[in-house]
Length: 344
Ligand SMILES: NC(=O)c1ccc[n+]([C@@H]2O[C@H](COP(=O)([O-])OP(=O)(O)OC[C@H]3O[C@@H](n4cnc5c(N)ncnc54)[C@H](O)[C@@H]3O)[C@@H](O)[C@H]2O)c1
Image (cartoon, rainbow, N blue to C red; front, side, top):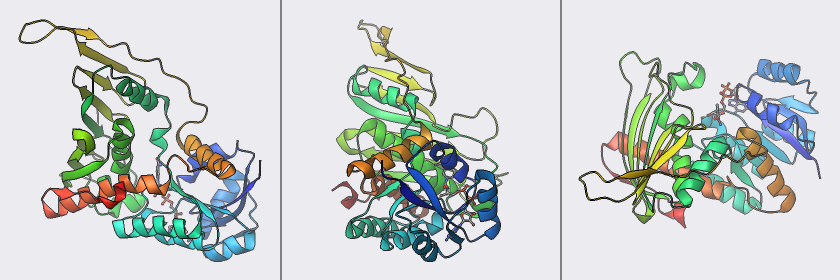
């Protein structure tokens, strides 16, 4: 397997998840480190015993001096557009952290830049690479509850991050809901068409803006998806993957976002409330690489094989479009069309 020569752009908190994955991958060689903060570069080098060929705050120079062919973008969301464009222009394939960008114009521009450069740009959607969601998706796909009509998801975690999130506009929708909305597309196979959303900052919030949100999506094929979430709800947390209810034409499945999956299907009867029987849910099948490791492995394998990765920007832009339409709806206080070109 050809080794990929990698520059990390951004050496902060999330790189721990990346390094725990790539340290086991023999086809990854870290040749460069880039961060605006020299102390972050030093801390990364020290923690992971990495001696880069080049390091500094100028990404274009670090790529050139290190001879990199791949960039892992772990910078803050507001930097993703510039980092991705610089990397693609320098001839690198890019795997970047979510969310792709903070505006649809930027996200579309990144997709165009990757296409024009003939390079791959894929996005970390680590929650697609977990046994629980694969199992839930399989159960929905097996039509154990008939045809899917509705997905409802709750996400409640009181998370004290500090850092860039504390000061970010629409923090829950922009920095977290991308995971949940992308999961909704992954589970349903449907794309969003319209959204009505609201977000607010509850009393006692330790964020500056938008720590709680609700959204209602009209999806293709008549599927509807509701979302309720908060990052400043202390106690009784859901999982990071959310707590889901899938309603079908003949039954319901419940998934706790982890390993608890159950369901009931209509067993007939003539009473006001019909009889219901437990659904036979599929067993959880282990997957070799989970979370970040799963996305990174798929990205590397796709480059070796010359195929499109599962979380390619051309697909992920449809999830980002959900987030950005939800933000637009929350700001305008009205139902908003989710970008349609993203579906072509
Ligand atoms: N996939 C997940 O589950 C998950 C979890 C946490 C964070 N994230 C994402 O990871 C990204 C980084 O989050 P974090 O928690 O590591 O933040 P962080 O603040 O700990 O680290 C970000 C680093 O990027 C650097 N940086 C900012 N702009 C830069 C630029 N233009 N060039 C080079 N370096 C730059 C900062 O100096 C900082 O060291 C965000 O997009 C976040 O949403 C994803």
